[in-house]
Length: 251
Image (cartoon, rainbow, N blue to C red; front, side, top):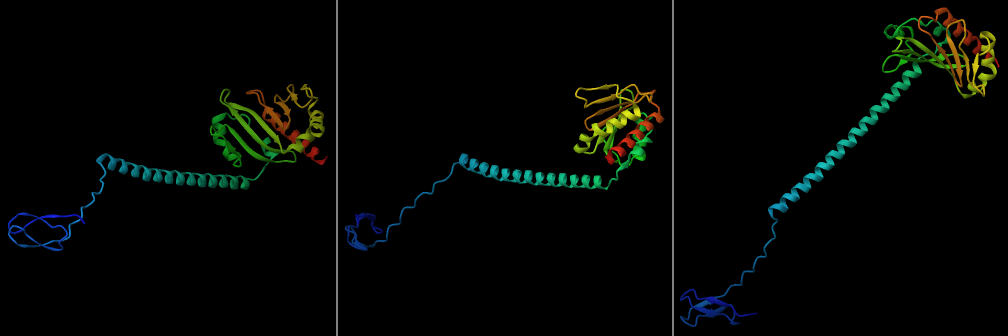
């Protein structure tokens, strides 16, 4: 232990404590002085500067904000996926509930309607049909041995019905068509006046019906001519296709 220097409380003289013990005597006025244990020095606690505090607060806020934003994004994605799934399920259920339309009903389609008339009448005549965003294409399933669905299309340019597409049901039906369906059509309508090589595409463009008929793999297409195609000619072609479908199905 090192020596301490204390001040005499009586005369104010400096007195060296040395190793004398807890009580010493002033050399000048003989007063007795009781020594106390020295107070330990306090260690200064480091303090952050204002800049450091601001940076710490900013970092904490940024972390919390990022967590909140991430949570919001996850919630939004989950909700969007749930809504998309629900919409898909609803559309699928609606499609399953829609009955198939007999091909004979397509024959009754009013081919003279312009686009605005079709937009007003098609939902009534064919409530089973779904339509595109412009309400000029109408699609629905067909009840037929070979035809699976149809799409009926109006065009803005001529403001008229331009095309009725009939799609074969599946790939096996498509493979069978050149062997059974096409010969039947040629028997009833006459030989196709144009065909591709190899003969996978057939075209009847000189029919007296004034409705052009073509066959591409998997597709029968009826092309109408504004002001020239007649309702009875269109109905006759649909009937011929129906008869040939039934005959092909027997084979």
